[in-house]
Amino acid sequence: MDYAELLIKRRSIRDYEEKAVPLDVVKDIINDSIKAPNAGNRQIWSFMIINDKNLLKKISDSNKNAILRGIERNPNSPMKVYEERLRDETYNVFYNAPCAVFIIGPAKAPTTAVDCALVASYFMLAATERGLGTCWSAQGGLIRDPDIMKELGVPENQEIIAPILLGYPQSIPPMPDRKEANIIKIHGVE
Ligand SMILES: Cc1cc2nc3c(=O)[nH]c(=O)nc-3n(C[C@H](O)[C@H](O)[C@H](O)COP(=O)(O)O)c2cc1C
Image (cartoon, rainbow, N blue to C red):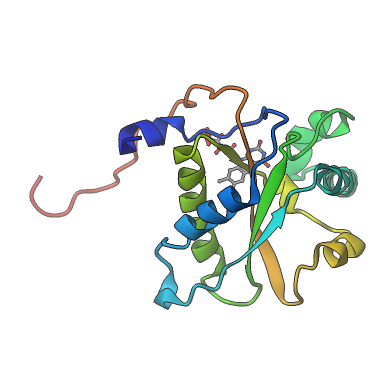
């Protein structure tokens, strides 16, 4: 797949086939993704593979409740726009994907978010190149239940930065429109 096609085919996928993703394929994608640039080549990222739809559903239910409780406490919450969807019992924050990979990094390191987002970006492209679909699910990472964190085994002092869904797409949607890039200034020769 050439780069231009890869950029078009890498879409956020919210509709997956039932088919499981073989573990070696997940590992191959991770091994491609770690070629991403990262601060000082410290590679502070870690990966958690969740190949278990029941566990994903449990996390989804718990996160939906926690987000809804947050909206009740703060009606100005930015999550308010998702309230109707979150109240829909059929809505799963992981869109029923067969697999999710959580990209995790040290909670206090200054470059965690950037490094993990970069590796996530490579992950999504590497998956697309193999015919797989991905979607970053911020709602999937908002785990507020300590028992779930314990069950998952997220180490102390580590945080989930990028919860990425992975599975075979039912279809690939067209790219949502992009605004023209805002180049604020060109210094030097135009
Ligand atoms: C940090 C981040 C958080 C996101 N969280 C969600 C989410 O919770 N649910 C969802 O359906 N999509 C989520 N997305 C996907 C975006 O909605 C998507 O990237 C955007 O609409 C552009 O579409 P595209 O990825 O197909 O280009 C997230 C993307 C990013 C980068």
